[in-house]
Image (cartoon, rainbow, N blue to C red; front, side):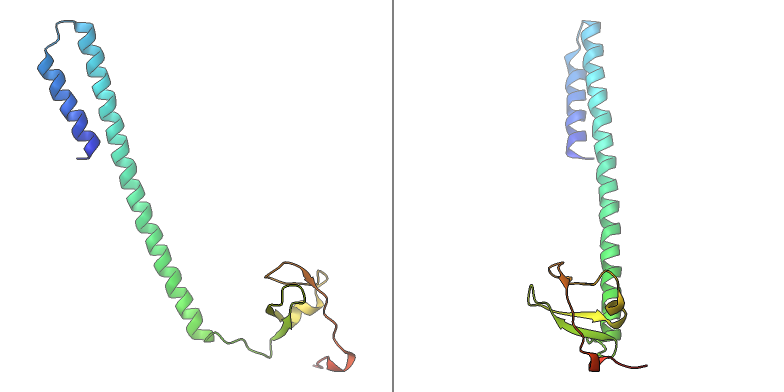
Length: 130
């Protein structure tokens, strides 16, 4: 039983001890106490739902950690230099990597750090042949 439910039960006991002679006042008081009891019950259900959601979120975080660990084990944090081009962004100075297929994109290359388009000039002799 929650703290609020205990308080409502206490109020119910107090109302029992009053022995009010006025029937209208007694009905109103009982109605208020019943309403408070319903509110306390709803709050307890909400607390249980929040606890269930919290457990689910914890499970999701655990699974994401497992996935991240598996990815890290597969790639060991290394980029395959054959598939990516290393570029220093002239705007933010960060080193970023682009897939070779991205070089042919009509949208251009956009730095993931500063979101500015990078103009990349490839000398004519440096293109790889298939």
